[in-house]
Amino acid sequence: MRISELSRLSGVSNATIKYYLREGLLPPGRATAATQAEYDESHLRRLRLIRALTGVRGLSVASAKQVLDASSAHQTDTHRLLGIVFGIWPSEAGRPETQADGPPEPSPEAAALVEAMGWSVSDYNPARQVIDQTLRTLRSLGIDYDWQTLLPYAELAARTARHDLDRLDTITDPLEKAEQAVLLTFLLEPALMALRRLAQEDESIVRYGDGPDAPPAGEARPPGHE
Image 1: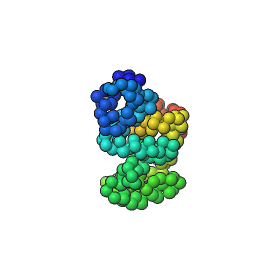
Image 2 (image 1 turned 90 degrees about the horizontal axis):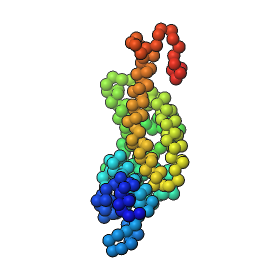
Image 3 (image 1 turned 90 degrees about the vertical axis):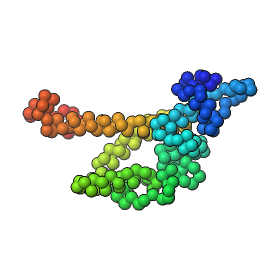
Image 4 (image 1 turned 30 degrees about the horizontal axis):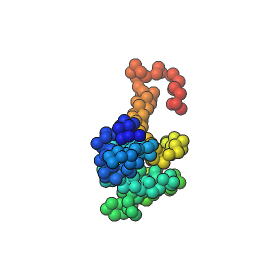
């Protein structure tokens, strides 16, 4: 396809595609004339992954190039490929993105949670620090929360992760798999939080509500409210 068709299909402007070509994010097409080239589906897949990394994950062009280069080197290793696009595994020689300023701080509560769940999780996964910091903040505000309180949420997260990867298992192209992984993870997170808010309101009505939406006294709880 010509660059104009590549632009139309990818939603990326001609000027931006040429910029990506100059910066090495996108490999050159097959030259057909001195100033013309043809592109194929691999260019389209890579463009969509670039857009996911920069527009959805929020990476700079330089960081996206590192991730793309590392992803290309590990296309046959799905676990490492997903770790790279999620920002857990190294995106440049020997340095995880989360280790830019040295090794991460220990996360004892996250480590206990991971062990209790039987999970295999990298020490560099930034979620470890998020869990420990969140628990410290809750306790500083007088809320008695520890890693054991998170276990029911962890079990729900495990089910969600299985559902996520079941969806990815249907995709065979490595670049498309990486793109979908980024989109499903980063774009779905606000929707998942919104579902929690909806469920909380519904549960609150069932338990405490006395307004027009509340079920009459003595009425059986609706399905899903065991």
